[in-house]
Length: 435
Image (cartoon, rainbow, N blue to C red; front, side, top):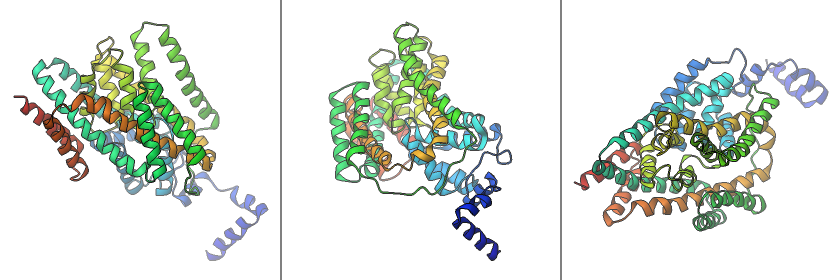
């Protein structure tokens, strides 16, 4: 065995022999050596099995996107050994680079690697359905409650939203803005986003962050450890990316020419999912700008639903299902929920299909790492601006409100109390306080 292994090493050192040696190796053999998944017939897992695996995760994964990534690592790296740590880190890096819900995109990518496109759909459904159904039911119950009871719950959920957003800002700021340059960029982004309301200011801040990062920030040089092989060709990847861009252009044009609310709902939530960086918390200002000024959802109901979203497991993007359900226009209810939920996740799904086959070459460019540092800092700034308005300005009206938000923040950040429990406690306390 030593002679054979040495022979392989010598063969790899000679270019002409390297080709002859590597040619007969199968993809599965290479993957076994590297600890990576390859979507071969022998490695494929049925979509039904993938659905059941992710359904369990969707029922138990509390704590937001960063916690979801920890659950995924425990399930697929440690327990099931679908891939190794290097490959998983590359997958996470790719999904953080893309617009959309990063943790859900990691799940979609894992399903794609093991089950093809059907596996990707199964992974998304399993991880998404529990929280989506719970939030739709919450919205329908909220609409049926009497004014006093609903008002107390609404206010308690709005107050706890302050603590949840502050917790996300605390964690993201420490990780994404560790130096003066990026912290300054984040504050500048918050000032600009607060001064230019609406989607235009938010998108402008993200683009400016990318430009600043590209031009002035520096990233540590890290050589890629491994590849992420997937049984999806470049042609399919290009088709997925083309569909992503085409829908981003065509849907607004069609919605502007039509009074069809279903089409307007599809357009608004598709654009929100297509343009948001940083995951579920950062989609808050984008969705608020889409649905509240238009009168589809009241600001109180919007913030209450966002607070309730912290009490359920799974991705925060399922908040879209709640908004579709409680909309004042028809279709709402379950039909509106399905339209909004599908629309907000569709761009992230298309980006995963398009990016995985092309990622190997792009990730090696240092300038791309620099740009993403700027985007991440800008995202922190957007979250800071959102914490002030509309969250703080709509929830904190008294010393008691401030005290409740501060206690919730203490429970979340210092005592590490599960978010779902903090949400329930704060909503209950607010309800008791109104008696």
